[in-house]
Length: 208
Image (cartoon, rainbow, N blue to C red; front, top):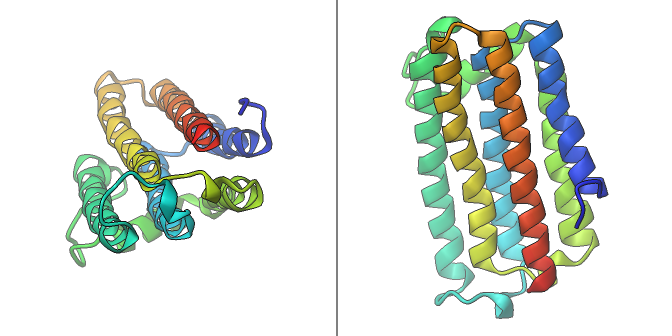
């Protein structure tokens, strides 16, 4: 699969919406990380759906879906929750939203940041790109017949790892005192890793 394929192009365009927000709408680093975090939650949900739909004969893992799908959901939920708590611990002061203000889950804080910054359109674009890849590639192109559970788990988990590195680079750029350009570079880094992960997953599915 090429970088200009329909699903890859949709992913690139969706990621350019936050880039526009950085340079023209003065979005904060917390707002961008909230966007990417919610997208990561959706990636995990779609990852579980991919695992459920995948042809079981392709998987090299013992135990099959009855073991690995619930295990993936538990591991991924803990991972994403930990990243969300770190996100508000590092950058919550930018929007006066700190972790554990209301509950253990940071969804309330994330929703308020989205409302304050007016990021509903950007969130819809990111979610639409993920949904498009699921329906166009995975179901429409028959990737579910060639995918296996190990590759699907790696694809979903890698998105959470990308967000973790985004937290690191975001903190670094903020410390250097150049948040606008730092955020622009951060988004470029995220797009590059996102696209590379996406293309790798499509290639593995094709070769399986």
